[in-house]
Every structure is written in structure tokens, then in C-alpha cells.
Amino acid sequence: MSLKPISLDGRTLEGGGQLLRLALSLSALTYLPVHIWDIRANRPSRKANQQAGGLKPAHLAAVEWLARATRAETQGMVKGSTELHFRPLIRGGSYGKMTTDQSVWQDIYDGNRLSRRETRIPLSSPGSVCLILQAILPYLLFHALDARAPDPARKGEEEEGPAATSVPVRVTIEGGTNVSKSPSTEYIDQVLIPVLVEKLGIPTITTKIIKRGWSSGRADIGAVQFDLMPFPHGSKLPTFNFSDRGELSNMRVSILAPGSVRISLREKVTEQLLARYPHIDIEYPVDEDTGNGARLYLLIVAETSNGYRLGRDCLWAGKIKSSTPDAITNTVIKELDEEVERGGCVDEYMQDQLVVFQALAEGRCVVDRGSKEDAHASLHTRTA
Image (cartoon, rainbow, N blue to C red; front, side, top):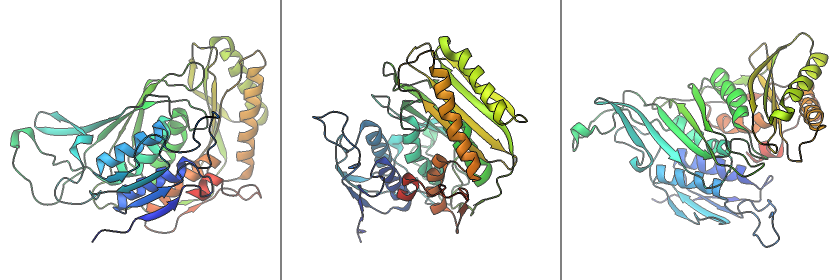
């Protein structure tokens, strides 16, 4: 019997891409069809003659990939669409025959052994790589591609019985690595992934920036490669409790700046951090010359003795001047100070990215955002 789709109003709360990404991700995992209307209706148009909201290229790229992976029946899967019907026809995570559309994946063999599967998500604009990853990551982790994939040398034969193990996957996503109003690749690599791996027990995920992509300066499309191992078939995510943050142990500073301001920015950040946190070690995992006078990005991550991470960042949107190093430093450190003072285990942006994993866990999970009055859930988190 055909399941009735779950209907979702795209104007709900944040009314942007968050609802779309999570709804499709969970639909692909649970085999439940969804119908979303007024997609991103709360997003204003940048130009007077353009339609507000609707599917932009980056949203469409994630939708198309999940549709291919689950052989979903769709309606409205076109650029600008404000309504989408999505009905998966392949259940993720099943035992037995291959349960994933092979057209999404390229099988890589080492002799007769399947060593990994690869997929690529192209994008013709510098839309956020990390938001595309957010949409497909739960599916990648929990649908467990079968390591007993058809062997070219055994064409026509069919194996029986449960899969012995899942197989590693490599996902290359084109688009922007540093994009306005989106998490950066640095944030994903230094905050999101370490927390998922160390606190939730998610299998290791490695990130490799093949080429940076920017929304600032001249629009430039980049590419990022993610390697991960899905959970074995039938795995359940244990409940988790984020509490007792511990003491601050060190700071990580990532700087992407043109040569004219890079040294000055590093000096300003170091000076202010040492003034506020004199006993904290400071590391600089990323310190790059962007080679472009219009591209400037700063991320500061506070790590704690109990393994939690709080991050705040800024992609500079204005003209870069001699006063810019002071301005961007003041902005990021002020916001980081507020996160630290709240006393929570996660920052505002990490909180909403954990909601989907709370939903997938076996029982009730706790995430301490802090005890201050302004430590309420963000609009993105309430939407999730």
C-alpha cells in the first residue's frame, strides 16, 4: 500500500533551507514520502524581479542526489520550484540485495575486492558545500552500502545472506568552501566532525579541500572530498549526553586573508586572545594567503578539557581596509566570548546540526546549550 506523504509547510519558523534538507535526509532514511510546499518562502529575493524562496542550485543538487540514491519519485524537482513531492523507492539500510541505486556510485576495486565507492555532486555556482553535506550526511552514515557489491568478474551471479560489512565511501562536492551565511569547511572540519566522531561515535570522516570556492570577490567554484565509513547494517546510534563542558584548554585560529592584512590580523587575534585567556595555548591550523584583496575569513575555536568545541567565525563582506583586522577580530572574539560565558557544550550553529542525530539516536539525548537567559534554541534549531 502506498504511504501517505508527510506534508510540511516550508514557511515554518526559519522558513529556509534547513527544513528542506532535514526532511529529505530523513525521508531517504525512513522510506517515508514527504510533500513540502512554500519552500524557503521566508527568504527574500536579492533582486526585485526575482522570485523569493524556491529551490536554488545548491538545494537542488542535494535533492537530485538523494532522489537518485533512493530512486525516488519526484514532482517539482527543478530550479526555483516552491513545491516538492519526494517518494523514495529504495529503503536505506536493508539487508540482502543491493539497496542503493548504482548510478549514484562508481565502484573502485583493488583486484577483485571492492575497496570503496565514489560519488560526485557537481554545482555550477559557489553554493555551500557544507550545506549539501548536511543534507546527505545522515543518509551516507546510516544506509550502509553493501560491501558485497556486484563483482565484474561474477556478472550475473547473486550473493545471498546479510552483508558482512559496509564499504568506505568518498564523496566529492563542488561549490563554495567559504560562503556567506553558511558553515565553512574549516568549521565543519574543526567543530562539527570532531564532535560527531568523539562524542557520538560516528565513524571517522576525513576532509580534503581540493580547491577553495568563494562567494566573496569574484565568485569561484571549489571542491571538497569527504571520506567516511558508513555504520554497519542494523546499527543504532546510542543516546548521548552533552553536559559538564569542563575548562577551556586551547584555542584554534584559522585565517584566510590577503597578504596585505594577514600578518596584522594574526597579531590582533593573538593579542586579544592572550589578554582574555592568558593561560590558554593558541594553535593556527590554517593560515593562508587568499591572494585576493576581497577575500577574508576568520574562525576561532575554543576547545575544552572534556572534548567540547565552540566556534565563531566571520566571512568579511565589506571592503578590506587598514582597519579591517581590528574590526573582524573584535566581531569574532566578542561572539566567542558570549558563547564561552553561556557555559554550554555547543555553540549556536552546532546545536541545530545535532538535532537530526538526536532524532536518530535510540533514546532521549541531552545537549547543554548553557544556563544564561539568552542560551535559548536558535530559530534554525527550533525548525530542525
